[in-house]
Length: 590
Image 1: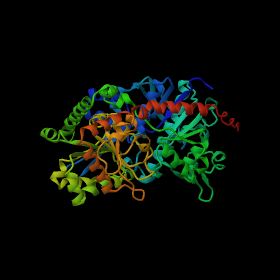
Image 2: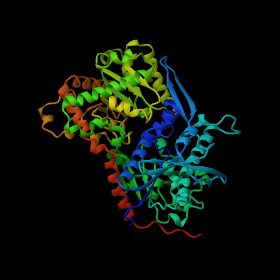
Image 3: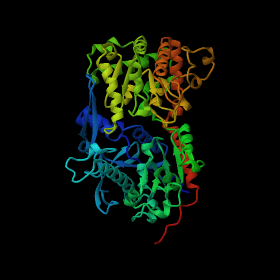
Image 4: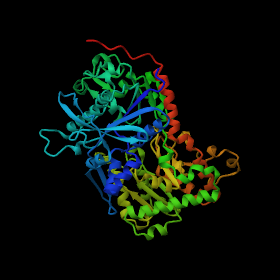
């Protein structure tokens, strides 16, 4: 077993480092930096992979990352009159000027018999190298949908086109990572496949020149699932199976194959074919084990709970929080809240006086990828009820809402339309509910450091981990959440109706004190009234300085637990387990 194994991390999105985006801002301005940040980071996977790679390198792990370079990104504008504008913006040229060029480019054989010219660019993630594979004309936008089909594409059905182009993205990042490894002369001891689109990194599953390549004879594979949602667990029909040359000698004997329907469960295939498997939170691991297609692999499935990198997210003043007085902690929070309000009036096109008028209000931050199960619809439902609207207006809260919408997700767009329509007709709510469009990895630290509370809400068992609330906790924020994903591991909820810390809390270590307010489930779903009551409980609690100080300390005390350094330590243990397993099956020689 190698003393320091070579790790290959492959993902469809790896967020760009903050320093990289700062250089983008210096050269091309804030709009391009914002767009570049969004181009490789749609949800939680991009930031997670960025920070996981940096932290592994910091811990002495020999790791590289491979992802795609995208030529454009969908930017969105949420208009105050209740409309959304979505349009493609080019970013590839600008990103290349900040990346380092290499002479590692190659021709890649595709599954359809054609070849693609792949450029290779790289940049530093801490002390690690991350490589970006670029194939203009194919890798034009992350997670393409029918709306991305180029105008005038001859004889193409938009849905068939998007299915094929997504397969090509997966093939380029997966098979391309293998070719790149050979060009680097770097035999991976372990390749980590983040979500099913990276399946083509597994050299043994597909019948091409890489399947039996002795360069990968001892490579072990770890499949890292990031979501229980159906879209991330595709079922291939026979046409797709054959198109990408899936080896029947491998898939036919596995539970992934449904002989009656002639379909292949890709998650099940990867779990079957990988030496290691893990989910991204304790609850997510249990959800994976309970999936019918994965049940017989339950003993193989582990979990390594996600974390976030302290150096990227935590305000520097909080790094020695234990030595600060309650008053000093409150002053730090006030200073960052002021910075957030200053950023807000500029970003949202308010008058400067707005920030001054609201400087003493508490800020609740709801910034997540917008998709139905994350339940942003609760805000519109709460505010459309006259009684609940009035109760919200009686609080001392500003509610910031924002996130990213996939260009093809009409349901998510409807959720935002409904909210904007309510705000458009209500002058009072316009000052209290603040839409944030184009939420991005570059500007996000401003929001997480300035907020007083962070929201994490999802339908039960639908959230894999969530890391936004962790970024808040590192900055002393309270958490308003459902008990899903990684929340049960790090958030201690106040009992319902209780709005102050008591003597029983003071007797506990800070990390065991209450630091959040629960949005309860009713038949597996959060409700608008449950969300409102949690906001009211938070509002009342934050009128008492002693309770604020207790929650701030309780949140900051879990920093070591939500730090990605803890995640990396657990991953290294998994690496050692996997490397102790028997060598992969000998290569076939036909």
